[in-house]
Image 1: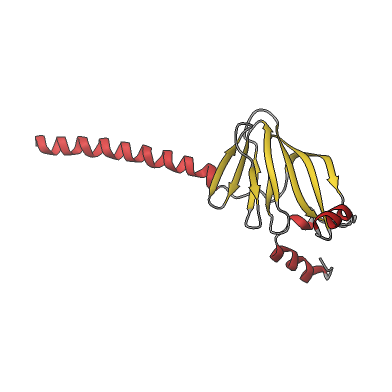
Image 2 (image 1 turned 30 degrees about the horizontal axis):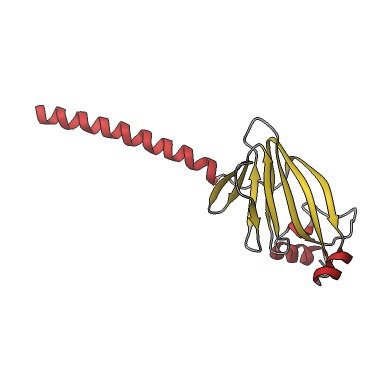
Length: 176
């Protein structure tokens, strides 16, 4: 009888302990496994400078691309939609607030004290501002030259992955 009480007591203790750990772990995972956003929210982009395609072609021999510098600010609770960089390499440096970069492998926090974020041809990501203040980063990237069109969808086609662009081409017949 004493053994039964001792075992029951331990069982209840361990059941409570493991239940609490499981709930805590599930709660922690939810923040990193949430579906990536599909649209931008509460975002401000300020152009700081552009090296035009003609200069890029003359200096480095790359045609049809520009080098641009922008300040991108995400307001509290805002985010940048999921996008890829296979034709748009870039560097990002957070200067105020916190950017939380999401990737399929998890999340990384970037602050003014962090090193820069590298956006290479394998980068597919999204960004959140879960803080209480606006978060700004300086973004420098090489982007394909695009002609502004009133019927151009958002995000710009340069932000879409190759397979997404070909799906659009199949549906509307416009060469991209």
